[in-house]
Image (cartoon, rainbow, N blue to C red; front, side, top):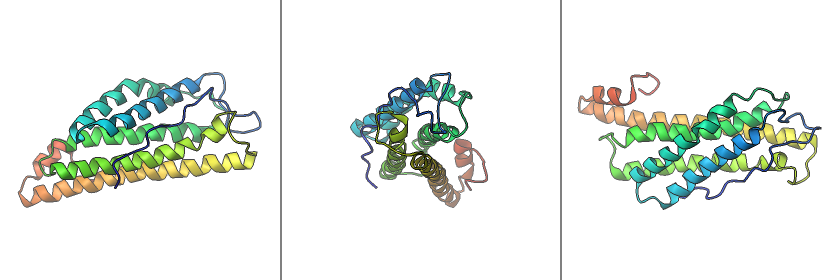
Length: 210
């Protein structure tokens, strides 16, 4: 897997959709919140490209993620939306969810002696690939979010929103699956040494992992 991930994400100008489209933000200004999420992920992407190793990458990206958490939390509370726009919001939030899956789980893997440094670098590259693909999907929404984007009719807009939502759902599930598979590898290696408890102490005893 290529370790290099998307270096730039789209920049959202005022987050508005034409009135004829059912997916439209109203009253509040979630555009600034979405921009904050995009900027946060973009900074994580740039940091991962310049970091020297998996540990330094995780330390810097986790710091950036925590700094941008307020945007995720606020956007989750936005409820004053016209019917149809919820998938746009959820798609953007899934991008932050994928970042959180990486930050929370890979941080634990870094202290797991069942993984070699080479394996940790490969695992990080896998997460980065998922982030890259999900970022590209979200970038496609600029065609309906940005009023200066390409001209699309209502059906095309709705189809795009639905497709991106499906893709983001898939990438989030993939990130969770990728995490489970790697943790299971650690468990099997620990089991050979009768050290399962150390793995449980590190990751928890959630049966879905084992």
